[in-house]
Length: 618
Image (cartoon, rainbow, N blue to C red; front, side):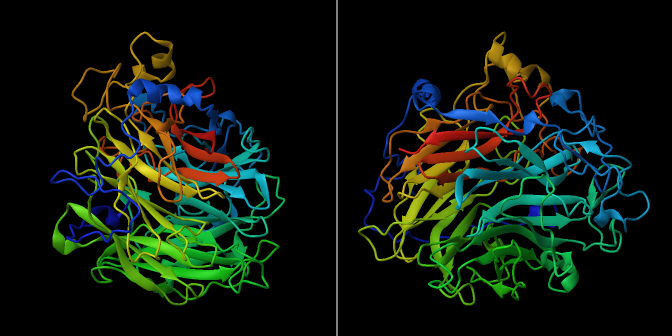
C-alpha cells in the first residue's frame, strides 16, 4: 500500500448476521468476540508441538534475496539513517552488483526529464525486501517467480519492485533484480503478479511520485513532482515474456508508451492504490471467450472516500496484450462514496471472476470493517453484488500500536481464493475468505466459505491453533489442484531466543535496543509475543482441517530490525513488514514467500530478506 492520505481512512462497524451454509458445526462465540473466534476444529496445539512441526513435516527454507547484490539509481535520494539501533544503515552506495541488472550508471530513460536535484547522483545498494507475492508458471511447474518491494532506503520508505526467479522448483534462484521500466518514479509499490495461459508473467505495479521535506516527511504535491516528464501516479504493467532468462528481459511499454492501465493524468480522480491482477487460463481460446483476459483491479481515492474499479485486456502469446478497456465501477456496500479497498480478483473454472471488497463506513465509527464479495460472469463487463460475507470485523489499528510490543503496522485485513472442485453443495465452485479479527485483543485468523456464489457463508473457523495468547496476522489463501485449501500467516507464539544462544546471535537481537512500544528489557531476549515465524494450515474443500498449524519458518526473527518507516524516518512508531506475503500451490508443493531478518550466513546486516518455504500438501 502507498503511504499517503488513505492512511487516515475511517473504519466501519456494521451490524449484520451471518447467513449459514450447513457445512460447519457451530461453536459458541463469547460475547464481544467476532463470530468464529475460539472455533478451532482441529483443537489447540502446544507450543512445543508447533515448534517441532517444521522438521516433522520436512519443510525447507531458502533465503533468496540475500544471495545476490542488487543496485539501482533511485529517482529521489533518501539521506536518512536511523542506525545503529535495529541495524539501520541508511542508503549505501552500490558496492558492485552481481545480478547483471542495469544499475543506472547513467540515468534510466524514464529519468531523463527529472527536475533539478533528481535523480540520485549514483546507484545505491538494495538493502531490504518486504511484502511479497509468488506465482508458478502453468506451462512449467518448475518455473517460479516471486516479487517484492526492493528498498534502497528503509528509513525513507524508498523502493522499486524487484523479482526473483527459479527454474528448478524453488531450489535455486539464479535470476533477480529490480523490475525495469519505471525507475523514473520515486516509488513502485504493491508487488503482485500472474501468469497468462502462454507462460508470460505479468507484474502489476503502482508507480508514484513524492519528495522529502527537510524533516523527512513525504510530500505529494501536484506540480512539484521530482519528475514532471512522467505521470504523477499510475497503475501499470510489466511483462516478463515466456522463455526470458536475462534479468532485464521485460516488456514495459504498450503502443510505444509506458504500459499504464490508469494514470492520475487522465482526469479520472486523484489517487489510485492497492492494485491486483488475475488472468483467465481456463479452457482454450476456442471454448472460452475470455481466454487470456487480464483483470486489473484498483481503488481510487478521490477526496470522497474510495471507489473500486476493474479494467481488462486480452493477453497474446508473444507477451503483448490488447488495449485496456475503460474502467468499470464495482458494486460496493454502504454506498459507493465510502472507503472501499483491498481487491483480490480470482477466477473459477467456469470463468466467473470474483473479488472481495473491504468497506470502511465512516458514519459508523472506527472499530470494524464489512467484507463483501462481487462477481462477474461476462468478462468483467457487468457485476453482481455486493454480497455480505463478514460483517463488523474488528481489525487492528492501522498504525502506531497495531500489535503489542513492536511498532509495525497492520497489513491487509483479508485474503481470498476460489476452489476448483464442485462440492456436494454444488453446482457452483466454492469461494473462500480469510480475515483477521482482533476482537479478543490479539490477532486471530478466521476462515469462511460460500458454495452459492456469496449468497450464504459458513460459520467461520479460527485458523490459528496457538494455546498461548499472542498475535497472529496477515492470512494468505490459496487452493491446490486437488481442492486443498492452504492458509498461511505470520505467527508470534514462539518466544525470541534466549540470551547467549546461537539463535539469539543469528537473529540479531543485540541490535534491538530502542523500542518505544515495548516495556520490557532490551534486547528482547526470551520476549513473548515479539518475534515472528510463519505458519500454514491445510483444509479440505469443505474446510475440514488437515492436522494442526505447521511452522514453515525455520528460525524466529525480530521484526524491529531494519523495518521500513512508513510515514517518516522521524516516526519510530510507524514501521512496516508488508501488507501481505505470497502463497501458491503447484501440484503437490505449497510455496510461501515471507520476510525474515535472521542471518542464515548470507544476511549479516539483518536486512529484511525474502525467504521461500516449500512443504508437501497433505
